[in-house]
Image (cartoon, rainbow over all chains, first blue to last red; front, top):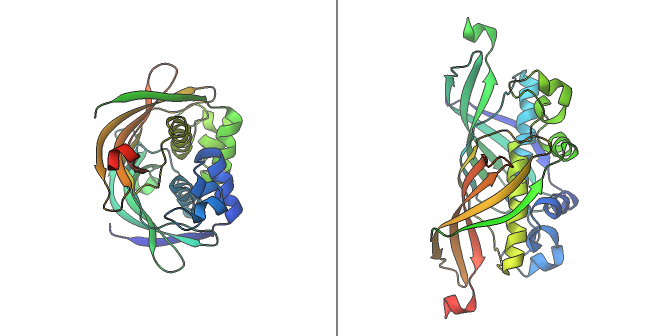
Length: 142
Length: 142
């Protein structure tokens, strides 16, 4: 427990921010760089759901490297969008394992973890606590 | 408070599930109908983040109809993916306002609401409590 890992990075482009937002979160500060200037953000920012989706992508890539097999998720306990994500920002995923417990359904187990996305200035832009379900490794269920 | 509204519907296609997942959540039960059959889900299911993104889209469309101006969000208090979302499912967004309060920064205000996505069988597939920031209408700040 308390183990913290840095799991990967992604640089967010303006085109990517606008494409995601046009499809899923078409508010002017996510889709229109001009209109975004007049908002409290002073420019285009990524949808918070887009930041979550990028976090998930980095998590899945890490699972693949670790040969961990995810088997679903009951949900998220809390999610805070702490700072705006802007075009060109490089986001790095940091994960801390908070708790693990076996499922009644073998061979699955649960992991509660805190995921933080940091920008290139070291600021936490997203902090999320969620639960994932995983296939337990043979040595854990023996 | 306690006001509940039905805000819109969306039918989720297999192509859409796979496209989202390839980009943001490339686990086999989200990207590969064949491989998904061997998982505990018994077939392809949407990424939970995709369901959240569709919920956001329906929320933004409702805001546009209501001429409500969203000005950001601090985050989500809890999010539960209660049932799998499968290709062809029609999801309907139901929203209940839980709490509202003014921001220190006029003319903004906060709304805490529960969003539920129901499938065509009336089952709740997603239940989420989140906070949104909005521009208060003139009559509310007068």
